[in-house]
Amino acid sequence: MDTKVIDKTRIDAVPLFRRGKVRDVYDLGDRLLIVATDRISAFDCVLPNPIPDKGKILTQLSLFWFDLLADLVENHLITADVSQYPQILAPYRDQLVGRSMLVRKAKVVPIECVVRGYLSGSGWADYSRGADVGGVRLPDGLEESERIPAPYYPLFSPATKEEEGHDQNIGYQDVVERLGEPLARRLRDTAVAIYRKAADYAESRGVILADTKFEFGLVDDRLILVDEILTPDSSRFWQKSLYIPGQVQKSYDKQYVRDYLLGIDWDRNPPAPRLPTEVIEKTRQRYVEAFQMLTGRPFLP
Image (cartoon, rainbow, N blue to C red):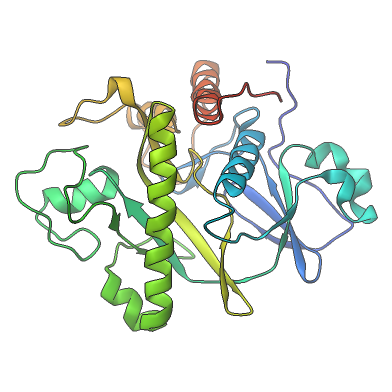
């Protein structure tokens, strides 16, 4: 595959703020430089070999959504044009083009704002064992991957942000207790409004937005979107023409990687196994397909 893979950035001119599972973040005072690498994680482990172009796809898809939703919610983006970055970053252009954003610093709200339109993933797992989903008791008799019925659709289903281990699903009242009712309501109402607009748009492109998660921050008490948005890493996308309720759907995400890992003898503890070439190529293909289906334009690395 004729493309440069970046599994770890090395930008010595500015301090490293943090290195996440996928993103390397650098501190520029009142701003941050976010670089999406090609790393991929599964079951809370970063895998040893990356997916070519993944970071560029995530970044460019986030930029697409930021623009589409600009009339609905403010976001942290300053620019993704590397030529507009501080001059000190010029020597690192090759690591930044197409996969980075210069953003405003914000006080990150410590809640994962998950919105579900369909019963899948951990939402389905909670429902199928008789538990509430997002603190809500849904009607009996729903199937896996079924659209959540009115009046619950779309369902605000928040989660904690854990430094280590899995995030924990909680309910709206838990958010109220943690953050207070005014901020909890703003989070819920904004997340649901974004989901509605994004889901309607995706459906017009032949894609179902089953669920997604948003991260928000505060700048001078203004609630803004931070991190990535509506990418295959943060969302569950299904092809509408192939959708059949009552079963697991084929997703535009890293499910191909998860399925491979579930089929081998690995205990889900580090170190993670290397991925075969076929798994890498087919995973990249799913990310590219998601980008093209949603944006209506070809992906140009």
